[in-house]
Image 1: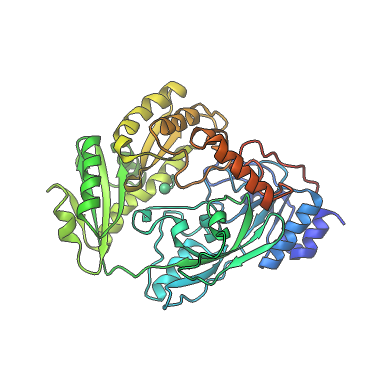
Image 2: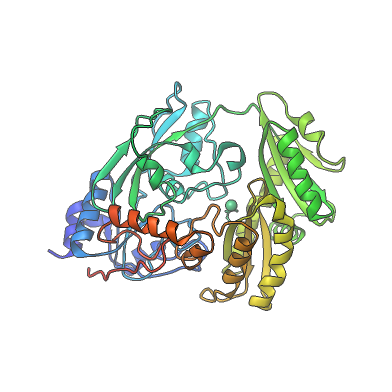
Length: 453
Ligand code: MLT
Ligand code: ZN
């Protein structure tokens, strides 16, 4: 039996895609920077089918790239060339939230938007949000330990995972779905899988921790005249606004770019930087927010104005992508050195990739800065080197929420010691002994074995 026959037997003929046109949507990432041809695309519909697919691939020595909604930005969810893409999209069931625990079970292919709708219908809050909500899936969110705009209050995916089911690289299925808040019996395998980027196992089901819904949401857009003022405001918001949920950063070129893309006038005065913050609570948080922001801040306590402010932030990613294929970074920087980092990035990028266009924005409250660079060819890594080295130099991380993927694997050593990387390799060998799961992702030098369909 060939691998193709084996996979057809596992998931049914119509869920094994070999036609190049049918494979194409699975082969290029959202940004357009990362692309590779897949040997095949396989779409299992159950956990048992995922296990059967992995068993077949191990027998054939065929490397596997797990893929959710294909919204990843570090090349970790698309083939590099010749792998089998394991699409989790059909595992998209969404359970009914359990009110006593405020938890819900979902298949790995359910989108964040579907989770949010289920939470809302039950009178709860999903406790996570970001722009790609209608495409990004729970399996990918957990595998990459995604964060988004509300991680400041609710934590990243790691803090929301109450249980997990996964098929490990060695073919065994691990399942811990009891949702017990306290359960410290033995090593926490689900915790190991969160953020493992599909290199240790394939997440098939998730038990997600929801939150009580806020009754009131108030956003504010603040124009500030220096980056030092930005850092000062973050401190005041954090310490004086207990109901704070999000603090985002925009710079003038980003606001201008988005406004031009949307065809709307800028709602704020010229300034060095802008902070978009949101507070939520059972009571109206307007007074708390108003007490810490300057008088000319734009307060939005009605849904339409709030959404208009958030659109400025969320559309920036789309506006940049419409202008070219960006190099995207999601570095994390200690807040104390944030102003220095933001000032040093543009000249560093200009020196590495002359003539390119740099945008900086992101999740200010988490120190998570998105640097997007337009101009360099997809394979030109000079700007990558400059930005990631700078993040490491100021005591930050090369990856705050998108993951390491293939995009940043060769810079992992900047922020992780040899001992840590060696421990990661040992765990990888133990859980994926044949090295079939997402080779080349996260750990440098884990090359793909050759697949033959
Ligand atoms: C965002 O916060 O907008 C996303 O992480 C995507 C991006 O980096 O553009
Ligand atoms: Zn982000």
